[in-house]
Length: 459
Ligand SMILES: Cc1cc2nc3c(=O)[nH]c(=O)nc-3n(C[C@H](O)[C@H](O)[C@H](O)COP(=O)(O)OP(=O)(O)OC[C@H]3O[C@@H](n4cnc5c(N)ncnc54)[C@H](O)[C@@H]3O)c2cc1C
Image 1 (cartoon, protein in one colour):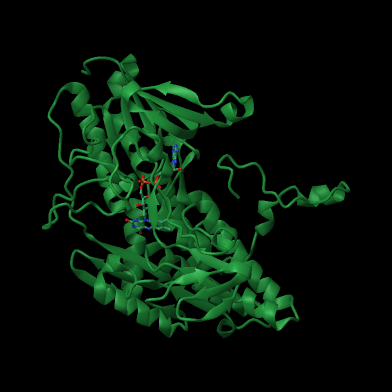
Image 2: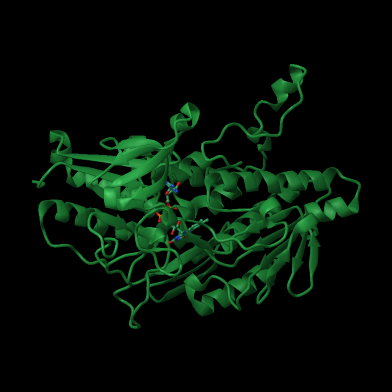
């Protein structure tokens, strides 16, 4: 029984937002029925993205719709509001929200009062002021970016196949990835594998005509799988003719030439930026405390330090790692923590509403699995190290068990099974990004290059 009526506002519909709301609606079923509790989830997209599947979506192994979970369906007892929190005044228990409607009405943000706040907007790409990066760089955090990148790579192969200009061909077939973490290595591994396969359908593009380059500033890649497995990954990628450059930085990609700190220059149309993340900028528009790196300072119970009724977890939150031997260590920004933190966070909100003692978040990092393309992978989990096919299989089994909802599990499994029977998809549907172009041309207009209206205002 909760003490008084509570309006719970969840900002973000990703790992933390969705799992927190899911658990709250299950644990507070009776209170929701009686109207004692109300849960509102504010998020820019009507779906949660299962980001570990983005590299496979880019490779065409999973269709884009199956790497996302429809929030309205799974959060059927919550109010899902498609929009963005632009500011939070926790002293007044109010968040400012913009939605598509407020944009059209021109009324400015709508003030939403709350009693309990869950702030989980995740992170955004951490970029640097590198010449040309803002104009030509491609991110890899959303399903739109993953599918856009797939279409782009296949399109470059089409350009290379049809041009007579060797310079254009060379630039089209050069793919530069910056950042050797999960996202960069998996995206490169999957896309190179897909392009290598697709090349067999081109009469004049051979796998060895393509240049795939991985640029990493530190002396190792995939720190998540440990040093030994990281070294194995470098050897494995190099064996596939992928040019892995450690202790190297991208210095410029102006005029579509990637210039590296070791002096190398690569004319290219593809610079994929996966060099880390930083907490979402909306955190700066709140009156809540943040640490030096911009994450919300949290207690081990997942409340925001020095406040009451404000909670945070995931990439946006600096949660003390109580399992670490050295003091002051924070939990790393990854899905493994985000999912587990969401559970404790939801339970602690319920405890707090019922006047019960709070739980501490405690999870020792279990290790990681990464896919490097079809039947290729690397893993280091609970002290066990795996390479090649067993690691790839473990990667699939692990993520299949983790992807939310039975519906998504069944669909992903069916797709993998069908891919074993039939050939891989090698088609680019780049024109999906300009669906009106053909009609505009037929109607005598000039096809615009603008993508259709997009709630996030990005293309
Ligand atoms: C390609 C890729 C592969 C990955 N692979 C792995 C892996 O294999 N294993 C692993 O452990 N981790 C992996 N990660 C990391 C993992 O996905 C993140 O750590 C995890 O998503 C963090 O959860 P979160 O809820 O904090 O943020 P997110 O899941 O990113 O959710 C944030 C949500 O907030 C919404 N939002 C943003 N701004 C606002 C706003 N102003 N108002 C309202 N809503 C807002 C966003 O749209 C989003 O829905 C991967 C990440 C990427 C990009």
